[in-house]
Image (cartoon, rainbow, N blue to C red; front, side):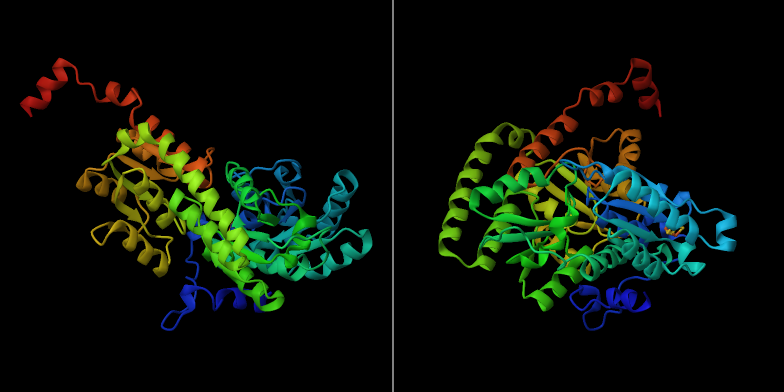
Length: 453
Ligand code: SF4
C-alpha cells in the first residue's frame, strides 16, 4: 500500500510534480471535511453501478461519502446500498476480519454482484487489517472478485484517493477480460461520473459522429466493461487531476493515447470532439465530426437567442474546483456573461493559467475557502449571480443574491450542447425569479428608516 500511495503521490503526469513542485498537498489535521482519500476513492468508484461497495470501517465513514454525489445509473442500483462492516470499539481491539468475511458472504449470497470493492478506512488501516490477503482469500473461496481499495482517509487528499482508486482498477480489473467486439473508434471516458445523467447527453453525440464509448470510467459503468477497457483506441480524461495516472499508465502499458478535455460549453465540446478525431486519425471520421459540430452549433445558436438577450453583460462569481473552474468560464462567456471572480482553492497552477487565459488577467482569484471572500468579491465586483457548490447556496440566499449549483451534488446535467442550453435556462430562471423583487421590496417605513440613517 505504501508503494501505491507514493506512486500516486509523485505521479509524473501531474502538474504538481513538475520541476520545483513537491507533489500533491499533504493532508492537514482536521481537513478531512474537504474530502479524505477514502472519500476520493469512493467518488471515483461508486458510479460503477452493479458492484457492491463495502466499507470496512466505522459507520461514520460510509456516511461521509454515501449518496453525496449525483452519479446516476441507467440500470443496476446496487451501488446505492451503503454496505459497511460498522466496526465498533470491540472490533478495533480484537480485529474486524471476522465481520468483513461475514459481510462478503452475506453480500454474495443475497445480491450475487459481479464484484465487491472493499474500502479500507483510517480505522482498519491503523489496526493493521490485511485487506489484500482477506480479499485474495475470499475471491478464491467464492469465485467472485473481491477487490481491496487501499485508500484510507489519512494518507492524503480526496484527489489522491481518486488516483488510488484508479490504481486499484489498473491492478485488479482492467485487462482481465476481452470485449465481445471492438470497433476502430472505441474510446474510454476517464473521470466522467455521469453527474445528473450528463453521460446520457454526450453518448448520443459520440454515436452520431461514429465513436463508441467502450468503457465508462466510471459514470454509469459496469464491472464487465471496465475489465476490457485496455482494448480502447483512445482515452479521454475528463478531469485531469483525478485520474491522470490511469491514462498515463494505460498509454505506457497498452499504448492507448490520451488527451484531456471538457464538455462544458459548445466551444469545449467541439474542441473535445476534434481532439478525439485527431487521436483516431481517420479522415472520414474527422469529416463526420465537422458536420456534426456545424449542425449542433447552428442549432444551439438559434436555441439560445432568448437566453443570450437576458444574460448578456451579467457578472458572475464562479466558485468551483478543478476542471470546472476554467471550462465553465468558456460556457458562461458563450452566453455573453462576464466572469469577474473565480475560486481557485482546488485548482492546479495549470488550471489558474487557463482561468486567466479565458477570463482575463483582471479576474479576481479567490484562493481560500470562505463565505466572506465570496461575498466580498460579489460586492466589490457588483456581481449578479454566484455559481458555486451547494454548500454556498445559503450564503447566496441569505444575502439575496441569485445562485446556481454547479457541483457534483446538482440535479441538472450541463455537459455538451444540450447541457449549455439547460445551463442558460437555469441561469435565466435563477436571475429572473420573482422572489428577488419580493425580498428586495422596501416598505415605506423601511425607506424612511434607511433615508434617516
Ligand atoms: S476514512 Fe478516515 S478521514 Fe475518511 S471519513 Fe473515515 S475516519 Fe474520517
